[in-house]
Image 1 (cartoon, rainbow, N blue to C red):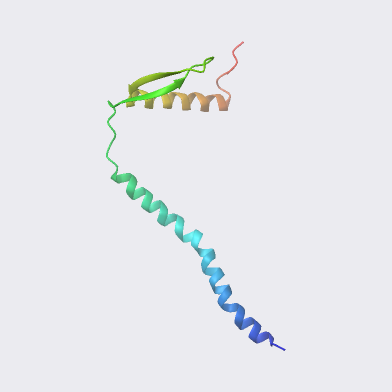
Image 2 (cartoon, rainbow, N blue to C red):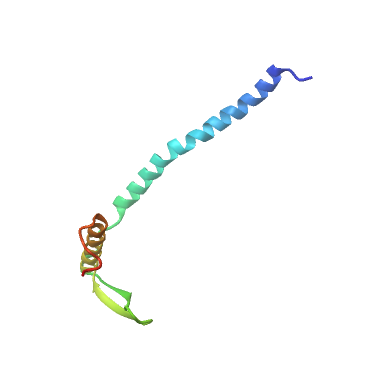
Amino acid sequence: MPSIENHLAARRPRAKTLFALALIPLILPPAIGYAAEETATRKPAKDPKEVICKNEKITGSYMKKRVCLPREVWDEVRRMSQNQAAEAMRGGISTNPQ
């Protein structure tokens, strides 16, 4: 019959391995964040005057319309949309005017 000491000795390496595996999520995210931050700083600045074309859906139609605008205008449209959505979420804008 195996003794308790032999049983505990056999479990110790497994416990150390599990402990080491449990530490990986604590160590890995900062390393990934650092790598992502480093690559983000290496990207060249995008030209605000570059013309970007998008296919916009037309309300009430299955057709799409091609809209070409400079990057700075698309950025402003995105910012305005985000601000309006945030304001609507706060209850500042009525999405159903009466």
